[in-house]
Every structure is written in structure tokens, then in C-alpha cells.
Image (cartoon, rainbow over all chains, first blue to last red; front, side, top):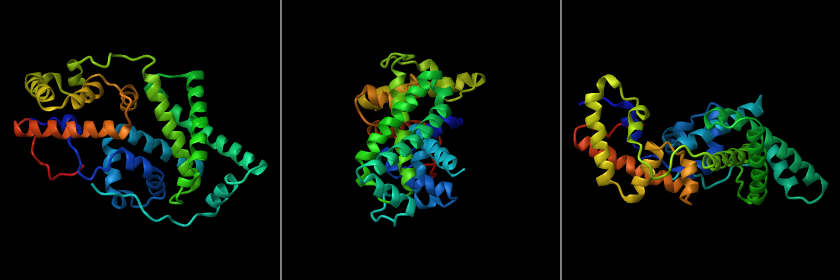
Length: 73
Length: 217
């Protein structure tokens, strides 16, 4: 058997994944926790799993985190 | 699936309380607060389109127009949803989220102004690039690609196949596909999630991928 890491990563699903609706609803809370250096992944494992797998929500997370950090500067 | 939405709201910080209070008023104080909020949203939307701009091939005035429209629509969404703010974050973080979402939605809409591929094409030649298959190992991955294609054809539902083909083979951004199919991000993600799980299961069962399903992330 061969290793196809990119394909394997893409097809692999995490049962903790909460989906876009819940991740979007809680994104502001999750982002503030990350920005504050808090245990976001431990507190919200399903959102963390979703943000790793969902490109659009991951982009929104990066954007909001940048905004929060920018506003704090 | 675990619900990670808190059911109780935290106490409001003073700044957030000020925003909520002044936006509930009528008159010049509210107008001034709206103008200040709009300035913040424009700043955030501009930064976000600049961050994403290089990847979405939009530049110059068009990008700035998109940011301003996103900020205006975000302001409207925020004022209509003030009652939904539960104080779990600063008010401005919650508000900025709408600007980010509006930028995403508008970039998705922009994709269809210059679509690179028709929605129903099946560009299987993209597969090696998409998943970084090494040309030197072509003999091996051709077998895998054929198995994947067979699984897509035989195991997926029509909807799963449509979403998989559009996103994976044709490179259609998920937010753009949402608009084209008149759906929402959550629904399309769920279709793709189920397709991914099904395809992996078939490839594992046929010995193309390792079975280590206990691994998370």
C-alpha cells in the first residue's frame, strides 16, 4: 500500500466536526479565545476540527483573527 | 455530534454594553455610533479583501468596491440582529464577524463573473496536481485514481457526486457552489463531508488507503 497524504487528509473526516453553521455561530467566541492565548481547541474541539477541514470557514477564522489582532494593535 | 454552543451568556464588558445601549437609542448619538461602527467594518473588510485578493484575482477599485459593499451589508445585518448578541465576546468582535462573512459571500458571487470551468465538467486530469501525486510514481497513482473515480461514479449519490466534482475536480470554491446551487455553506459542506467519508471507506476497504480510523484530525 502507498501513502497518499494529501488525498488521505482530504478524505479523512473527524466525527467531532460540528459543521459550518455551528462554527460560524461561535466563530467570534472561538477567535477571541485564540487571540487571548486560551485553550480554544480543548474548549471547542468540534469547532477546531471543523476549521481544520473546511476551507471557507478556515478562511473566515483567519480573517477574523487578523481583524481582532489588528484592532488590538 | 457535540453541540458546542453555550446556552448562557457571559456578562457584558463596558464597551460592549455602551455599543448595545447607544445602538438601541434614536437620534444623533446613535447616528454617530453607526458611523463609527461603519468605519470599523470598512477597515476590516478592506483588510480582508487585501488578504484574500491575490488568491481570488481581483485588484484595484473592484476590490475596494467589494469591501465597501461588504461593510454596508454587514452594518445592515448587525443592526437587524442586535438582539442575537449574547455577550460571549466583545461586541466589536461579533460585529466584525459579519464583515468577514459578507466578504466571503461577495467573493463567492464574484467567481461566477469569470468562471474558469463549466459546473458539470469533470476534469479528472486535475487530480494529480490537486493531491500532489508524484509523476515518478504515476504507475501507482493511476491505479488509485481509477479506484477513486470508480467510487465516485458508483458509491456517491447524485448530489454528492455533483459537489465532489465541482469542488475537487473543477476547483469551484465552496461559497461559489453554494450560490450556484441555491444552498447554504453548511448543507454543501455536509454533502462533501459524507462523500469524503464514503470515498475513504471504499479506498480503505480496497487497500488503497490505510485503515487508521481511530486517528482524529
